[in-house]
Length: 291
Image 1 (cartoon, helix red, strand yellow):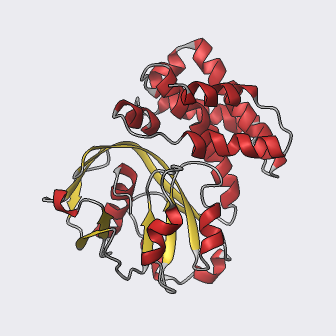
Image 2: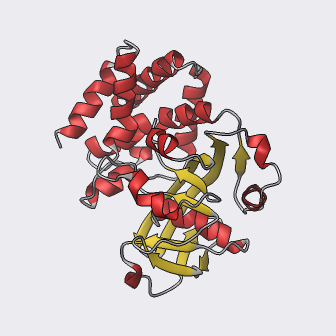
């Protein structure tokens, strides 16, 4: 559910290994050809086992939730018809605390996944993969050891992409936010610049680092350690990757809603609860809200 660039990329890799992938969409009729993944690591295509309307509940072993994390989407209501007692939920989304409502609503295993990838959707059936692709996953409401022989884990370990299971998924969530908090918003506010262009400007680079350090500060109040070396590593990694317009930038340019609250708003609310002052992120949030 959420067959955009990220959802189709990982579902496609799962289909390559034999998974029967069903796309759940508001517009089943637009999928009139195989889904093509044009990838830096080699192109491939896959034909979903089924394409169904989100209004037609179907039993699934695993539900991949890869929609945008937006206040306008009631995630619980959206997925409830597909969540049988045996269904596992994989959440592949940006942001912090985006799974809180799901944890309150469902007892089934909920896996939070962090996608480290540069990918965009050119059309419903054309996905452009430019760089990276690693997927990290942890379980939010159960011990990962309980799933050591689960078919889902076996499938993910067999994918043709780097896959990592972690018992410290909260650490990974905050680490992903270190990158998302500056680069997604600034790519929008700076007029559609790529990651390469952002880091070519010394003033923007200084602002990126300042925002990263504020995420580091809030993470500390949550019991998560983000080191200065990690921040520098993210900067250098971004310099080396293929020039990339972030997902937020592409959504904004397409006239779509952007994940301001998932990436920044939830963080500001938590920082306020913890009495942590983060003026750079506050400014960033307000600038996006006034667009």
